[in-house]
Length: 578
Image 1 (cartoon, one colour):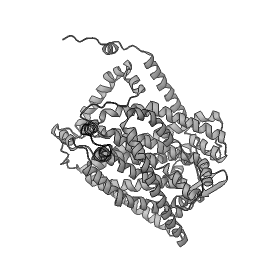
Image 2 (spheres, helix red, strand yellow; image 1 turned 90 degrees about the horizontal axis):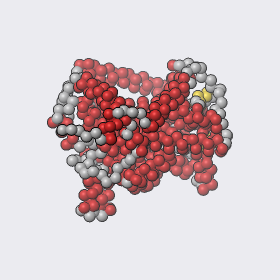
Image 3 (cartoon, one colour; image 1 turned 135 degrees about the vertical axis):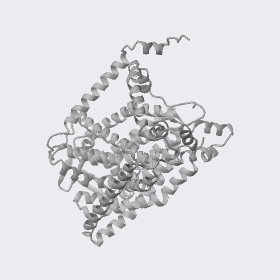
Image 4 (cartoon, helix red, strand yellow; image 1 turned 30 degrees about the vertical axis):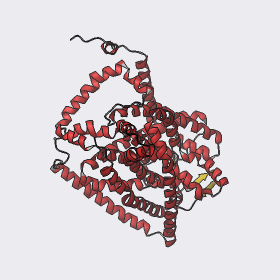
C-alpha cells in the first residue's frame, strides 16, 4: 500500500528550519544565559550590610534572581512529591509513618523553619552567599511541596479499581504501571496544585528574602526584598513598579508554562466520550507544529525512553497490586536504617526541645495557649468564608474551558501577588472600617487559605468525566440534583485535599496577618501567629519553639480527628468506578 505524503509527512521528510524553530532556539539560548549569569552571583562572600535598591533599573536582575530561586524550589518540590507520595502509596507500612509525618511537616509554619534553616546553612557555609541562597530555596520548598504531595497521593489512592486490575492482567511491572497509569492519574491534580504551590511560594517570598533575626540581617536581592523595602519606606511608586513587574511575571508564567501544561494534562482525563470543549494553548500547538522538535522526539527522545524502559524493566519484577512482592534483604536493611535514624533524630530533637522549653515561665505558656484559642477561631472563620465562594466559582471554572482560559490568569495573578506587600494598604483600610487587626487579620488570613481550596476544586471539576454530566442532562436532572449526585461527589476527594492544605496555609498566614510591620509602625493582634512573629523578631527561641509546637499539634489533631476521616470517606465512597 502506497503511503500518501501529507503536509505533516512532508515536514518530517524535509526537516527544514522555520520561524518557529528559530524563535525556540533563541528563547532557549536567552534563558540559559540568564540562568548561568544569575547562578554565578550565588557565589562569593555574603555582605549583610548591602542595601536593597528600589530603582526601576534594579528590577530585572532582582526578578531573574527570584525566578531562579522559585524554579529550583519547584523542581525540588516536584521530585519530593512524586517520590514521597508514591512510596507511601506502594507500601502500607511506610504510609502509616509517612502520612502522619507529612501532617506534622506541613503543619510547621514556614517562618518557624526560617531561623533554624538559615543559621544551620550559614554555619555550613560561613560568610558565603550560597548558604543564605540555599536557605531561601529550602524555605520556598517547604511552602510549596505539601499540597502537591497530598494531591498526588490522593490521586494514586483514587485510581479506579478496573484500571488497577487491567494493569495486573497485562502484567505491567512497577515501572510500566507508574509511567502508564499512576503518573497520568495524578497529572491534572499535580498541574493545578503546582500553580497553587508557586503561588504559595510568592506569598512568603517577602518574608524569606528580607529575613532578620534579632540584630542579624539575612536579606537577599530579589523581587520580594524589593517589595518589602518599598513598603517599609512607604515608597508607593517603587511598590507599584514592583507589583507591575510581578504581575507581568505571573501572566508570562501562565502563558508559557501553566496553560500548555493544563492543555497537555487533559489527555489523561478518564472519560468514555469525547468532551465537547477542551483546554487549549497556543504555545502547546506552536511546539507541536515544530518540525525540528518532532524529529528530535522521533530520533532522540523516543529511542532514549525505550532504552531506559528496557533497562529499568529488569529492576522491577511483575507482581499483583493485591500481593506486593516481598522486600529484598537490602530494602529491609534500608528500612531499618531509616527507622533507626529517624528514631535517633526524634529522641535528640525531643531532648533539645525539653532543654529550651524549661526556660519558659507560666506567663509565657498562658500567652501561647490564649493565642492558640484566638488563632483557631480566626482559622475556622477564614475556612468557612473561603468555602462559601470557592466551591461554586471553582466548579464553574473547572467545567467551562473557555471561562477557565479567561479567568485562570486572573485567579493565578491574585493568588500569586504576595499579600504581605499589600498589607500596609489593606491594614489602613481595615482600621478605618473598624475592628483593626483583630478582625482584619481574618481577611488577610483568607489570602493564604482560599487559593488552596479554589485550585483543588478546579482540578476536581476538570477531572469529572464529561459523559457523567451528559448522562445527568439526558436524565433531566435538575441543577441541584446534578450537584448532589455528580458534581459534589466528583470534587469531594479534591475538596478534602484542598481543606487539609488550606488549614495549614491559614495557620502559616496567621504569622504574617496577626503581626504587620510597615514603616516604623507595628500593628499586632493577640494570637499564636503574632507570638511566633514577635519571638522570631526578638530571637526568643524558647517562646518560638513553644508556639510552633502548639500550632503543629493543633493542625495535626484537626487533621487526624476531622479531615483524615473525610479523606478515607473520599477514597472509599467517592472513588471513580468505570
